Length: 121
Image 1 (cartoon, rainbow, N blue to C red):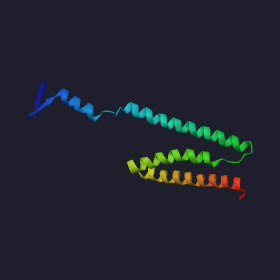
Image 2 (image 1 turned 45 degrees about the horizontal axis):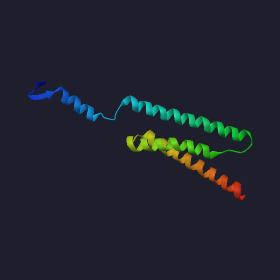
Image 3 (image 1 turned 90 degrees about the vertical axis):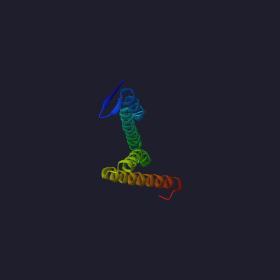
Image 4 (image 1 turned 45 degrees about the vertical axis):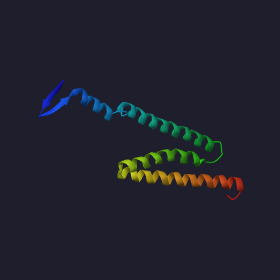
């Protein structure tokens, strides 16, 4: 069934078909669920890392900065991706902060490992 609007034939099925093709694999609900799942997963990992960090500190085994380097690297990667794609100042600044924090904690962790096993510290 085609209607004429301004001299252009419009076919409802053709329009719906094109719309379906354009929106294929773009289920907004699915995307929202995936984003929420990632956020919850990151939060759970942060809680577990905090539990390990506190437990290790309380029993007198020192601080394991490597745990937080790993956790912060997750956020750093996310903000780097968002900064590249969205080019928002906030994401750029946060990507720099999280990346620097990840690098600093990684260096401290590696230094402590080397110092512990070679008696230089």
